[in-house]
Length: 160
Ligand code: PNS
Image 1 (tube, helix red, strand yellow):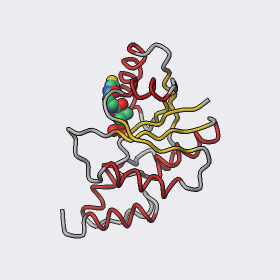
Image 2: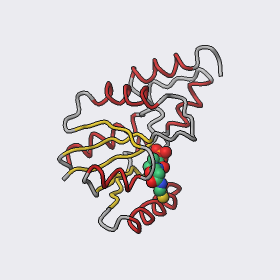
Image 3: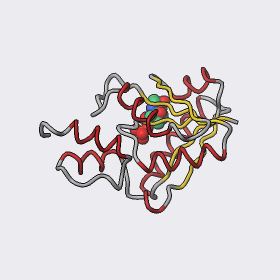
Image 4: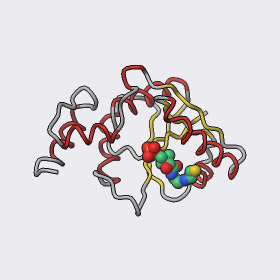
């Protein structure tokens, strides 16, 4: 049984990698699906995010990296996979995640969303927080792998 792990991954953090690693042991395959949202420009392009995901997951078995645009349910149908996984950090994530899971299931009945609790050391971690710290030249080596740290430093080297 495969699972789709959708998200923005702008950029991938140690929190995402923890979920990917644990899912790769529980499922036969993990399809990491990067949202390609034309209307929402991220710090990294979708190609850059995919590249960083490729480099940081190269030692994790059963991982496939892809991108999608439009509705997640349409992508899931196209992939023939009706399992979604999302990481849950704190109660504050719950309302948004529950809404998404229920809407998705309403429009694609077979779709199930699995929630994986973040490991305690990643509960506070998000791509947004990492970008904020990096933009002020703060230390981010404890939040992201080296290759992502370098990419963030490079993004902000000319200033915010
Ligand atoms: O990492 P993120 O930004 O929390 O991921 C959110 C994501 C990509 C899972 C979500 O925004 C999504 O699935 N977008 C695709 C559009 C869609 O299907 N929207 C309906 C959900 S209610």
